[in-house]
Image 1 (cartoon, helix red, strand yellow):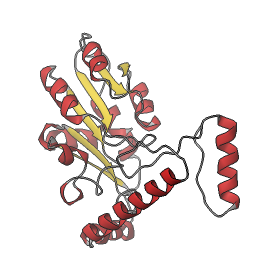
Image 2 (image 1 turned 180 degrees about the vertical axis):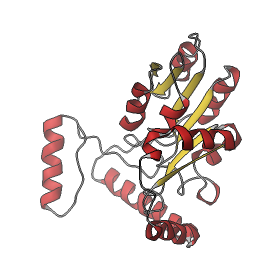
Image 3 (image 1 turned 90 degrees about the vertical axis):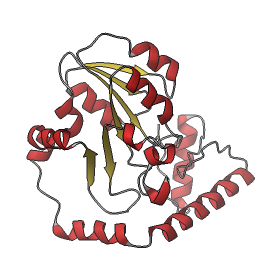
Length: 233
């Protein structure tokens, strides 16, 4: 919210993937720019919509989408962004510390780290801690520090949480990642054996139930049996 509202303004064009997290969509709506939603991972639609005239153009996407667990086509996104002189903003909350070389995230996984202009991530997913961060050029960071109201009017993280995140970052992350992917494979295989369709190739495994009522009933059944799996409607 703070990053997008600091960088994007009136007469700008924001191109956002349809399945981006609600927090990204709301941030786009609040910045008074022209918001254009392109079809999920549909690069042809992105190419078509980025042709709209604007003062500046921003492409916003997640690295790994939180609902479907699929990867963004970052290779093509970065190419389109470069050809159209756009700013690429990547929210990698679900890929950071999990995928890529040494857990360096989705951009690293695709080899396009240097083509991402603004990198937003979380410490609460892959690290299991609390807080978040952005990575970008110095002038962009300074702009966000001085313009982001959600940053200016928020208390800093307690030292305890900073130390916790640091220790988790410095711990044996490779061992933890191997354990995660082992569990993912085991869970995915188990789901397929009992008849569920699993299409995700990431660590996020959505279980598609179908009707809303059935999904709610299924969630309640799991909860009664000691499994908390919140149904998404």
